[in-house]
Image (cartoon, rainbow, N blue to C red; front, side, top):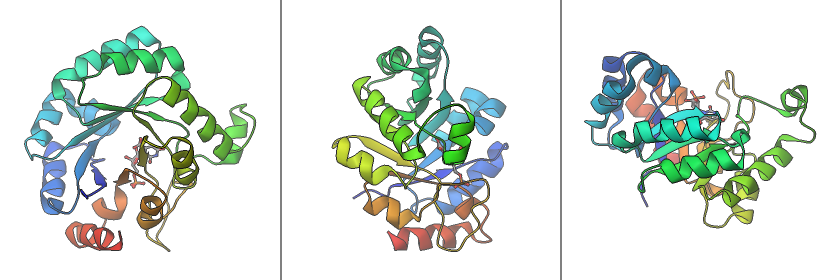
Length: 224
Ligand SMILES: O=C(O)c1cc(=O)[nH]c(=O)n1[C@@H]1O[C@H](COP(=O)(O)O)[C@@H](O)[C@H]1O
């Protein structure tokens, strides 16, 4: 089984990102480049990181009208990302058009409810019900829209996996027991997420902010 860990390279400098990725090479299965990195370095930055030879997860969380999101997907086609994120809240037509515009080797996954939000945050946006209900609802919509999978927290991945047998499930918000959660609210351990059916484990600060990132990556790998 391939290593499910994707390291979130949430740093604005290319050299720092390369150095961090180089340190943990062989102990993570891929690299995630998000808004911070992409806004700073765009295609050039992605090419630089892709040279390290690991699968690239382009976490752009696209959310706009269908035509605009499809155009953005076409514009990143050339980068051949293994995974791209869009927001499920953009609705069915947006998700369908995003998938149609993506390269055939790119998995398009929809963010359901960010792991930094809890039930109270959801209610403050005017949405009724729990985080669990919201994730299940949006997962069903993403499946019907023809996407490859979703992004959700480890609190929901077990239930989503039962409902969507062959889905591809990306789980961030992962912490080792007792570690600081920071801005995350729906958190589980990497092992728990894996056992409950996560396909990809997104890990950022547990590795990137560790005194010894290689030791941290190896330790997390060993828990799986
Ligand atoms: O799409 C994501 O990757 C994502 C979705 C989500 O709901 N929560 C979430 O934390 N993420 C990303 O996962 C990473 C988590 O970082 P750490 O909390 O440092 O492990 C960040 O790069 C976030 O942008």
